[in-house]
Image (cartoon, rainbow, N blue to C red; front, top):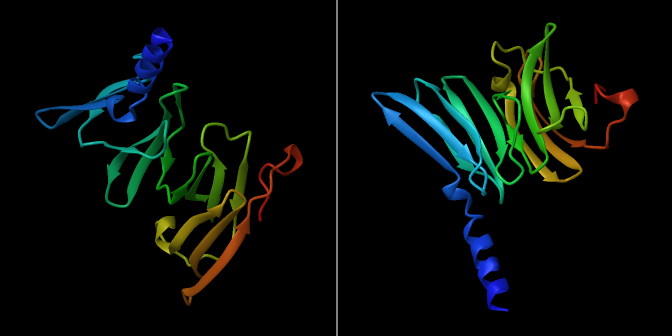
Length: 182
């Protein structure tokens, strides 16, 4: 009984997410080290010339953001599983599974909703008559998850910058509808 309790206490002590990352600074150069709860190194990078931002965003998830001005790159890190997402530009919203960000691609502004760690699990593009802007995030007023199956999207539309608000239903994608325009 005493051994089981000691194991439980040790396990709980090793799941403090605030102890899984460190940012070192030396003469305005920054190094980031992120570890799993068991101590295995997930990330050890020292190529930053501006201070990276690490946020605790869930029980086992961190975000690592670097950028300035109107461009920021964010990666998601699951410290329990040891997984790292690709870098997403100008993240506007996320939950425990999905991330939402704007892109300009092939002459079109799109809002992308995708699985954080695996684009093949979930990927959607929302294409509308967004206001013409040089930086896609400028046309977004607000984006937030209402629940696991819906997203509130508020944006400026068209040349007149009309405010539009709509709810996007997040039905599961299929292989036939991986890049559907919804």
